[in-house]
Length: 242
Image (cartoon, rainbow, N blue to C red):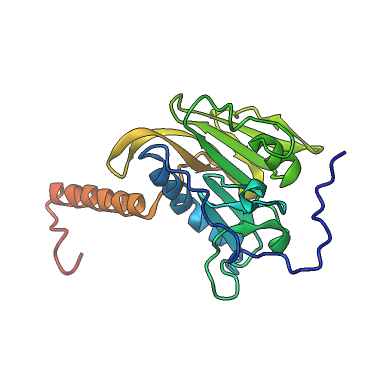
């Protein structure tokens, strides 16, 4: 069996400030960045409830260094979105340039990849290099999701007894992620002026987790409807004593 233990060196191991922060790859399409932002913004209040001390990190198209290699990028994967519990949001007052496993030890709970093709690259289980193998055997991420953007399909793998098993959707056609108390699935709607299928979170009751902008719009709609009902009753909603 191949050992994943880092070699014993007589020099300090590199940290996030010394490793490349980008592999030079470009974004595949205009949906990728809004998609990551949507996932982060809508689940942020949930993560704050889980971590009232603020000790967590979210990565968006950010490198995870999982082994020491030469060149360094051979030991790195850069998922489109991931969440790590119980780590400080910053290191020594600096924003992370990457997430370095030998520096922080704790693995992400969930990693998401947005596949621009058929997902074969994201399902590659070639030892030491394929994405699925690295997340399963190298980093050991409990939940790994592959969003096939063109097919509007999400598949989620769960790490069970050291191997990934494809999860089944629940009665709402979504994937439960128990450590977060949420479900993951596809939502058709408008976000950032784009009407598309989006990867989104729901709570365990089946309610969509909203962004701050969506919550504000929802509150404005409710207020407008209430005002209309009051006017229909002959009551001025703008009166000072209402």
